[in-house]
Image (cartoon, rainbow, N blue to C red):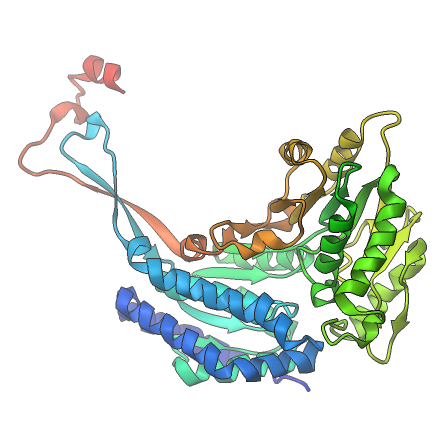
Length: 465
């Protein structure tokens, strides 16, 4: 199935119509925002089966996984916004210094305006609609651009959005990178982009021409550290789960394992047992194991299998775009396994021990010599985990778990450095589409003279400030 590119003329018309609608001030009313969020929530419930079937068609993802990793997260985000939008939107009083005696100071939160939200294919509901919740809650209009790599889902979302919102408020546009290039060159008031660091550089360069603010949710090589103090059976289970959710096509999936030599053999054994526990004796027959998104992705990821010694897994089937979860050891220095975000079900093993320096120092140095990752995972003694977190940097982290930091809406989700800028979820989704405006309200009944030329009270004022 191929999507038709939205013509450039139509993109221009949509942006102008949304700017005109925003100027009517309809979205400034919190009641309007709440009604819009309720309409989105109800539409997701009405179209839930259709959305799930579309993702099944595109990615062979089971309904259960679609609900747990996509639909339930968006619905929870909407409920959180509905409960708090009144409080989030309120004018906030701040303290005023003595030098502004008599004045009152406030933060006023105002919507940025018309937002562009561009999402990837791997979680095509969550990563498109979660930012939309923030845009609606903040009072913005929005243009949504889903991925052409999941055409069934992209068309299903377009149908759903059209059933509840007029195009001059929320619109869905379709197409390839040519459409993206035109969108990024347009003068939106904000861009929210989820994708790869390589594409983000193009987004940032184009947006800079119009000084458009951005949130960039990217990726990178997220390390998973297995210390000798870890509960190896549990570590293997949670790594196996984190790496096989969505077939490893998750921006915060463990990308490689830094493992203590004392527990490597046990980990390989327990990882194999965990895969069988999660997916049955033959994972290829599991209805919960997602396939690679397209032939190009299959060819790219399967080519990495030659980069080292396969110690578990390794089966592939090009006709189904199936790649078995695979542990790879003794990796060649020139292998993409060490330099490229894998975005598939392969896990390279990098082994350290305590000779010629501690395990902690070795893994910390390895991580810090590379770009900052979107996530970092540590399995072992919690105290040691906190030490490693304190000595490294990542968008988010888990101690003795993987992925789960994304499930708490009270925590920010976002990257740092090469893995992104800005964050969202919960109140931060609202803040991402909001301008915090400083306002000082000064009295008129009196007027302190010290600020005026010729500064006769300068010596006294200098002591106060």
